[in-house]
Every structure is written in C-alpha cells, then in structure tokens.
Image (tube, rainbow over all chains, first blue to last red; front, side):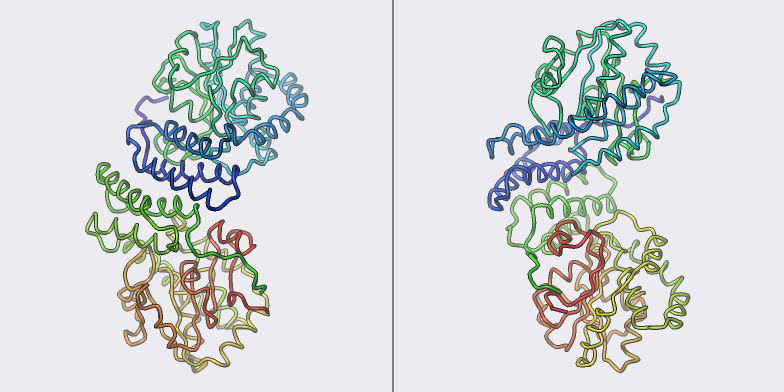
Length: 280
Length: 280
C-alpha cells in the first residue's frame, strides 16, 4: 500500500451533519416526545457549535451520545438492536462455521465474514438488512497479498488484541478468533468501555459467552493499553480513526464514509484489510 | 386524496443536518481554502444554533445560503451547474418535444417530463446524471384520475402562474407551458427573487428566452402575489412547503426527503402530482 494517503483524522466539515444525523436517529429511538426530541437536538447543536475543530469524529460522536444518554437517562439506547443483531447472526452461526471449515483456506474465509460483518453499523445505516450483509460475504474478493501480510504478522505475534466493533459483527469475528486460538495465539477482546451506538461493550461480550478474563474495555483515556500486545486486529472505521498512526495494527473494515473513501482513494463501501501506510 | 396527512412545514430535526450538508456542498463549490471553509461552516452552525424551530426548512436554507454567499462574495454559487444542466436538456429538447407531439395524450406526456425534471435537484443530490433523469421520464406512470383533476382545474382557470424550480427541469417545463398556451391560457413564470442552490431566477429564465413580461420573481416577502392567478402549478418540494395550505395549487414534484415521504405516507422518491388535501 502506498503511504502517501492524505488521511487527517481530525473532524471534516461533513462529519458534523453526519454525526448530528446519528444523534437524531438515536434520539428517535429513546423518546417519542417531540418537545424532548427538540430539547436534545438543541443541546447537540449547542455542543457542535462549541466543539474544537481538532477533535476526531469519534470524539464528537462520544460527546453527542453522552448528551443524549444523560438527557433521557438511558445508558444504552441501542441495547435492543444489539441483541437483535447478535441473535440473528447466532441463528446462522453453525451454518457459517461449517462453510468456513469446508473452505480451502479457513483463515481467508473467516476473515471475509469478519469484514462483511462490519456492514452491521447503525452509526451509518438507519436499519440493517442481514440478507444484504450475507450477500456481501458471498461476494467479497480478497487478494492473496493481504492474507500473506496477515500471516507474516501472525508469525511474529503471539499476544493479540482483537478490537471489536458492532453487535452481530462480533459473532462473525468469533469464527476468526477461534481460528487464531487454534493457531496457538493468545487472543484478547478489545471492547468499548461505555455503550456507544451498537458497538460491543464488556457486558455485551460476556452475554455472548466471551471469557471475562479475555475482555479488555478500552476508552479514550486508556488507549495506551494496546501497547501491551504484539499485534492489534482492529475492526471498524472509528477504530481506524483511533489507531491509524500505530504500526502494529491490521485493520479490517468497510469504508462507509465518502470523506475517508476519498482520502484513501477507494470507492465508498470498499473493504479495507491492511496495515495502514505499509508498502506491500 | 385523503386530507388527514400529518404535514408540518415547520422544520423537523432531520432538516438541520440535511441543510448543513447542502451548505457544505455549496462551500466546497465556492472555495478550496480549508480555513475559509471552516470559517463559513462555523458561521452556519452558529446560525443553526440560534434559529427558531418555527422556521420552515426553506427559510433555514435561505439563511444558510445567504451566509455562504456573503462570506465569499459570490451571489450565485450554482451558476455553472445551472448553465450546464440547462444546456444538457436543451441538447435533447427537440427530441423530447417530438416524443410529446407523437404521444397519444400530449398533455399527460408533457407532465411526465415536467415531473421527472424535478430530479435535477442539487439541494438533495451532490451530482446529477441526466441519463438517470431520462430513465425516470420513461418509467413514470400517472393515473388518469390525476390528469382528470388537472383538466378540471384548467377548465375553470385562464390565468396560470407556473412556479418553477430547478435549472434543466425548466426546459422540460417549457414543453408543458407551451401546451397550456396552445390551450389559450395566459401562463406566467414564477421564479426565485434571488439565487438559491440551482433554482431558476429571472436572469436564468431570460437567458433561456422566456419573455421578461411573463416572469414573476417571488420571494418570501411577496408570496401573496400568487393570489392574482386563477391556478398555481407549483414545481418542487420547497414550493410545496411554501404553498401547501392554499387551495388553488396543483403540485408536481418528486418527494426527495424521508421526513416528507413519511408525512405523506409514500415511499421516498415517489412522484407527487396533486392538489394537497383534495379528496379525489
């Protein structure tokens, strides 16, 4: 990969209406009261009016989400959606696992599911059609060179932090994580320290049977925790924002924003499976 | 049409990010300077922060567009786009006119082109692909009852104000306007008093050969001018916002906003060809 990408993870102008839209979709989930909806919308606009242009999009999203959660006393507005998406993917877990086990290259096949699972993103899409996600899984093409890069990193890494993104997606990730464990790796699960949109928290992960000892809650204030691991596998665009300057991270995500797509010089909804800035 | 639609033409929460997005697209047209872009974005957010929730979406769009135009000293940021769209449709005008003339029902056929021309809306779409517009023209289906309503109104109206919307679209409108004139009607052309997005102004209309005596510039301050006409034919969603409470208006537009689509109980990108609130 060429290392001349013009990626600036400070906020772009376009991030502001995008994050306001995210906020408005969240507001509609937590209250039907029009007066309350406008009260929170006003608070969001006020916060945006005062925000520093040097924040990252994810930091602004955190601010906006905190305003909503505090205004309605609901700490996890997407809990129902998260459970719904987890259950829908759990329903087909056995089928997918079998497909991966029968594949010529199990590692490659499991990576495909892990990437397409990143489509289950309520920060971008108002609703998720799981059949579209599965269609994407069936159509993903990954070049061998990316798998070679992945294997090269695995050869020199025993202690892996797998930073998760969305509910539903995590069930697909589990297949990949199990393969990494079979390869003898220690795999820890990075999760959000607090609920934000449909991202996985420690509570969500424990509910899905992940071992408490393997779960690493990460917030903006303890991001240096990632230094403790040989290799980071990072899911999703927000985690790309947070970790793209590090050199021991392999990113797996779908580029879901026109601005980042332009900076990376790829079409929107492309998959991104790479170390950032590496020359392959 | 049932008259129980829950249409509220005050601003909805969702209008705010939508209009900010419109503004950001305009900013990117008028300056490449990142500092200047952010300076104007900050002004827009400040204005939104102070706006009354009782304004209509179109009024907020006017405020946002004025801020941009004043900040860069460019009174018509979409002039190039408007000329481009006008020229592209003028290129195929003869062909379309011939198709209308050969149609079984010329009035119906010309209305189809007038409606699908409303797709040429830079307030909603960042770019316009004219081939998609023409594909839509070929696929529009209009029920006879709507044409019957139109004819009934025409039978009792001699003095018609045709309120235009976008550049490009106006060339299709011209075919319909010529047919109305053939029917012996006096047809006047309503245009925006000032440039906003790619809407037609008096200057644009004169440049396209419309007669100065037939052009009626309308702003928020002289909207009552529409009282002087027997019938209003109103193009576009913004004009629906402005005139939906009147009873002598036939609207022709594509519903391009999820909020209005929900209020009208139609799918987004449906066509709207009706008097509002009429029971057919």
